[in-house]
Image (cartoon, rainbow, N blue to C red):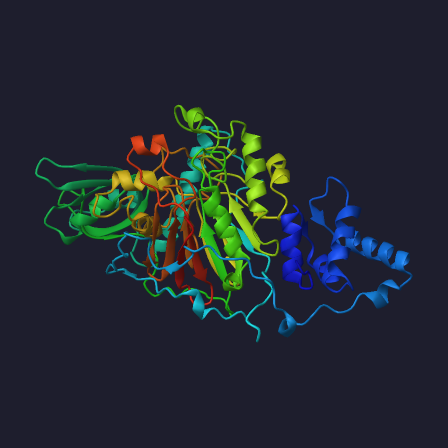
Length: 538
């Protein structure tokens, strides 16, 4: 394999298990014999090195120059220009065709509050060079909302008070411009028949004997009951309410001032006027999750086809790989899981995952968050992997952050959340409003509530912290989740919501709970347009 281009050098280093500094790759590309220089640099690197540094390369080039009697500075020519690049193209898998939805899966139907995602094939790619190829030049992502290193919760009463108070303050701020809020204590002192508005967390939802709904709201001063009659247009919205989420109501106090008759119900929501940010150049990101290395059903062949495709000219614009949790299958996650494991040791699972990650081009920027199968605490928000696991997965120098985190790439903000709360949302909401077959619709509700896990104390574990890291304070441009192993995507108020499926075929446990996974798909988003293409590798 000829190694005269930076892209080829990065791929060859990744194949040998090395990441490399950008300047180191440039020096190798500019050497008189890049292949020999690469061999020398690898040989001169320490045995435990996973990252090839500029110093390693300079030392190797100096030694080679001394042996040949040439001067190091004169021997290193400038790397070839983009116009001269004609990289070797690995064969693409036969099934790697661009699709807008998986086979036999209906397209997402548009709703009143969402617009469909436009898709386009990779024939429209613009690689930014006359020869049709270009080396990746990703930017370092910015990260916000990461709890890693900031967890202070001890499980004491004060922590619960703090997290709920912070949740209320953040979400009520989103609603105060829409209603003339009065605290519960002030409403208690108002005369019957008064017009009132209140912002509070949903403390209870119950039906009355005649079929009306009583929603009890709580703020920092107390609680107050609100009545939504069954003949109101807003009665259907009661089905969407989850305990502990923040809403606002407007209405009139009863004659005895003991209850509010609700005329309007408001969610924090994403403004309909939201306009997402886009990149100022043509660049793409691959959104994947739920790799589950270590499972007997991990689809290694599909992953390798995906990795091979990333090396092709067709994928030249894919500069970012965003992994939304569950890198490995884990151990003891569900009953009798050990009977479905291919690798029984958790550290060996991460070693194998790292090997599969090495197949991805070395010049891609990788960001990963943990999931509920990963070796971090189960309670959300989850901090990033510890140092021992980071060392195992260090070959690509991936950006490892907590769950959830907002990652900004090329000016586009991506809220990455593994998605355990989707189980709760799908279970609590009526079938027509959320289902496993259309996970993106459950994601719409999280955006509407501006919180990735609104219900506290359900089946999922939530950690009381000084702050509520699960509030969606700033509207993201893209919302990326996984967990449910189903592919789904669409736009909600111009936010692209993507649940990226998985890389694990159906397990015996999944079959027992009637989960039919969408496996081997890679959603590819154009960061300059937020259009989406879904590619199948299984």
